[in-house]
Length: 155
Figure 1 (cartoon, rainbow, N blue to C red):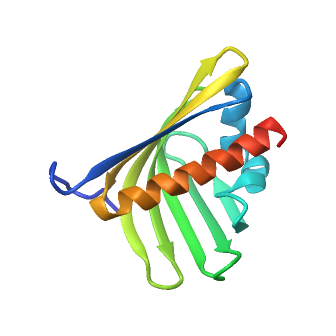
Figure 2 (cartoon, one colour; figure 1 turned 180 degrees about the vertical axis):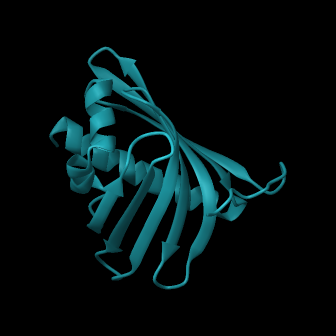
């Protein structure tokens, strides 16, 4: 079992990405936690989802395998849910690896679903990142939110 990086203020950074989506919080939350819906948007249009497994409860594990359509590289993500508040919040560990040797080590992701009437603001806080990973992580989460928006908004 992996432990999260021990980091000082100079060693780790936090990435926060937010977007308002055209669906109620419960629908957006289901898009994240229902494996069938997750397969529809998983990581965006540039990737094929090979597998999705998740036990969406505190202490439950999740894992995904996706393939970059352009490069053919296989990416593997996994972690453990630390907090699950249906319709409102998910917190889980996050570990990324690839079949080409990348291994970013574990980090922590919090996803908040903030109701805004018929819409939802999704706030993703990805912490315990290495400084050189912040820009790519931010771009990746923005791609994810675009894909989720297409899934819940019918685009």
